Picture 1 (tube, rainbow over the protein chains, first blue to last red):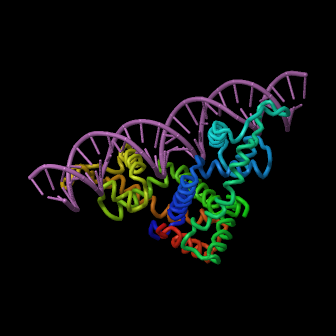
Picture 2 (cartoon, helix red, strand yellow):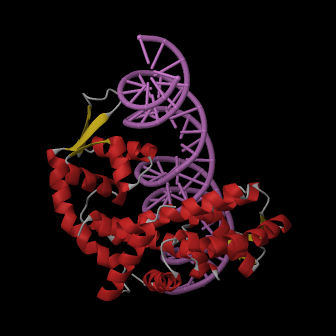
Picture 3 (spheres, rainbow over the protein chains, first blue to last red):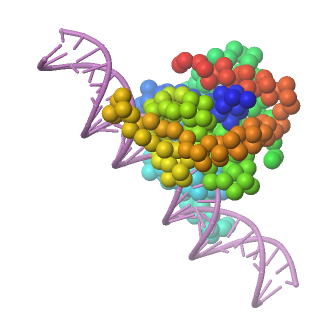
Length: 141
Length: 141
DNA sequence: GAAATATAGTAAGCATACATACTATTAATA
DNA sequence: TATTAATAGTATGTATGCTTACTATATTTC
């Protein structure tokens, strides 16, 4: 099995392509946001408010990583952090007004851009890819 | 389309899983090497000797990234860098004896571990995934 | 209820990963 | 051939992404 047929290598390349497509689109829209930051905002839009640890669990981040992501989103004014009343260790994260506005502007753009990531695949192949990837990702260990 | 059905998100999760599987195996083998470092060594094993820029082009790294990767491989004594005689800007990179030994020990392990990355998929699905990913990755823009 | 354990968030360290800018050198072109 | 453009590698800066360690708090267990 050559390197180029190894799932590990192919997946790295796909991830590379995925980020490229995302970044180009954001540049075109003149928005300063990464795909990871978008995912965090997506989780917050769906759930309205979450502790950082919940966000991490929801979209499979490391809790150290999410801290930095949330930091940067906070600096841009798109999310806010308030201490939890129930748990003095925890912080509640919510989208701000401007964060929600940006997210709603962005959502259709990001949805449309998904087909560019798998550009060489037709509709049927794309559906298949999503199915296969979903199975692999949901596997426990 | 929900976040969890977006190729971008699924690909990030796959990459995460891929690295986890690789790292666990290396820990088990008590080897200090990353998947990216392995890919660079793989390219060098195939081509015997390459300039850094060639390695980067061969396996689709950024040339700034490859610099650091080669640095770390050099520190471990697995590759060596010598100035090119034909081009005073360039450096020729080759696997050292110990680098080649490590690579040959590692190669079958890494090949075997590929199926763990796509753990939930059967043989046929894995083949299909590799086909689809190969198409998407080879797409120009 | 006190001690042991687990959890939330942060900090520090390492390794990608890319953009941009820079130096030295090479190639292309006028 | 003199100038311009391109390339090889490095340096710097930003953003993941993870591990380990740490503090403060909660939860569990005895």
